[in-house]
Image 1 (cartoon, rainbow, N blue to C red):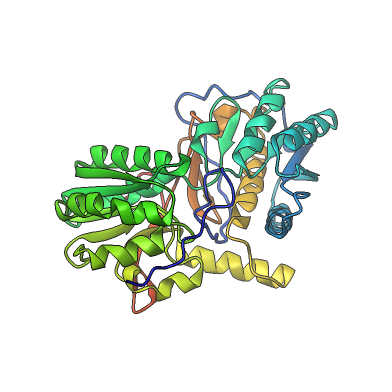
Image 2 (cartoon, rainbow, N blue to C red; image 1 turned 120 degrees about the vertical axis):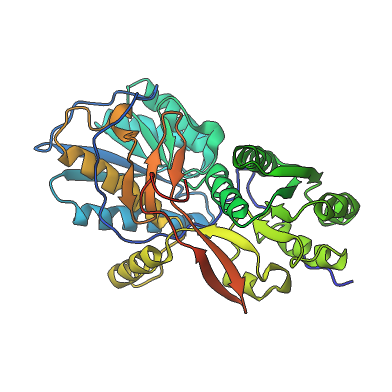
Length: 394
C-alpha cells in the first residue's frame, strides 16, 4: 500500500480553507432587524474622511506572512480607488502575527484616530485587537475564519466551516442524500468542523451514521480506518473535513482501498479541493463535492488584481477588498452610525468581490457559495452561487 506523505499544519490556529475572490461593486442596504452587541463606533458622515487601520501579519520572519501582508494591503488600496462617495485614509500596521503585536498595533492605531480596525489575520491576534478596540468603542473586521473569536465588537470576514457545511449539506439533501458519516481530526479545526457538520446535518434533516475522530497523524488515520469504514458504509455520503495539506490526501487514498467507493458513498469535502492545483490530480478526489466562491467573480477580481500589481491575487486578498468596500458603502450612505454594529450587520448584506456576504450580530458571517466537483482533473460547478440571501442556497 503506497502512503501519501502526511503534512502537519504549521500553525495552531484553524487552517485557512483557501478562498479566492472576485470583483463586483458593493451595494449598501438599509439595516433590518436588531443590531448586535458590538461597538457603536464613531459618528461619521460622507463629507468626512474615515480613518481605517489595516493590521497585517508582517514581521513574523515567515515568507508566507509577508506575501499575505502585501496582498491584503494591495487589495485594500484597490478597493479605496474604486470607492464612490466616501473618503478613506488607510494606515497599515504590522502585528508580527502575534497577540502582543496586535495589542501594540491596535493601541497605536486608536491613538492615531482609527475609526475602525480591518484585520488582523490570525485568531489570537484578532482577539487581542478586539479587546483593545472595545475599550474605545471601535469595531474590528478581522480576516480570521475562526468563529470562536467572533462576538462583541469582533466580526470575522473569513469563510466559516458553518457556511460551507450548510451549503453542501443542503445540496446533498436536494440530491437525495439521506445519511452522512463525518471524519474529523482531534484538534481545534476538527472540533469546529464537527460542530459545523453536525449542525448542518440536523437542520437539513440528514442522518449522521457516525462521527469518527482520528489522531492528527499518519498512523492515527491508518488506525482509525476500521471505524471510518463502519461509519461510511452505513451512509450514502462521507463528509471529509481535513485540508489538502493535512489528512485529506491520505484519507481519499485509503477509503477506496477499504471498500468505501465514492460512486456509492458520495465524498463531500468541507475544505477546498482545487487549492493547491496539484490536488486535482489525486484519484481519490475525483467526483467529490466542495464549496467555492462564485467562479465568474473570482476570475474578474483575479484579473483586475493581476493587471494592477503584476502578480496573482492571494486567496484571501478579496477579504481586504470586501472590508474596505463595505465600510465605504456604509459611509457613503451618509448615516451617522455607519460604522456601528447595527449598520455592519444589515440583514441584506453586501455584494462583494468574494460574492454576497453579510455579517451577523454574533460576529460570524454568511457567504454565497457555489457547489463544485472535480471531473477529469478539472473543476466543474454543479450548483451556482446564490445572488441574494433570499434565494436558493440559503
